[in-house]
Image (tube, protein in one colour):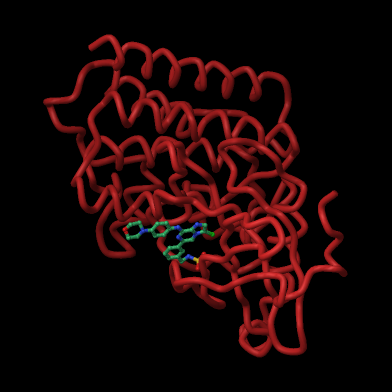
Length: 285
Ligand SMILES: CS(=O)(=O)NCc1cccc(-c2cn3c(Cl)cnc3c(Nc3ccc(N4CCOCC4)cc3)n2)c1
């Protein structure tokens, strides 16, 4: 049986190479001594969390992530803490960070982009079915598993929908939808993640973020829905999908609806269907 978190402690793990450095700490490759199971150990310093006033952020990450179980979501196996650190035991994603792969390859083929989008879309359907919106999806927060499958990670910003803008927003604006940019106090629904799906699709297909520019330019472009034009080389299915996502969002009347009702769910599922169709067509191309 899985040990309860009070029985977990650092001595149970053999710590390997650092996998990466994040805002509040580092991620190490680790091996659970008893089972030999390879995992990733995210180490957060309590002092730094206190200094950044991020106790809620970390609590939320653990609370949300520990309730998720889906092949497209990085596995959460438990957590424990000692006098000055918090440890989160996570699935080891052998393929590393998606954005490094995207950087290295420039952009992905339509077939690969379509498969990635369909995977992210089905992970989002799962998250939304549990009334959770990720809100911080970007290639940096998407890891790759041993077989090239995508794993959504880093649930620090996810909240139980509907969210509002009381908590701080930091990091790049590129992936944020208009309603999160809009200055007036507003609430938003999980449609923000659908917006990001469109931004990810654009980025997978072109290697660039669709609203790239300095902050005021990016904000203006996002609020106007003025995506940079897609390259002509792309198939009509690919262009249609990216535009349908942004059209779905820019003109989506229910987007500001407080609740996620059936019509919005239908729109989103039909969007997922489009992603799958787009993936299927790309496979056929
Ligand atoms: C806030 S944060 O600390 O979580 N983000 C910073 C960061 C930065 C970089 C990586 C990783 C990272 C996290 N991982 C987790 Cl969590 C599970 N597996 C990995 C994981 N796996 C991984 C697997 C392979 C590689 N290689 C592959 C061969 O080429 C060199 C890199 C890197 C990371 N990496 C994280």
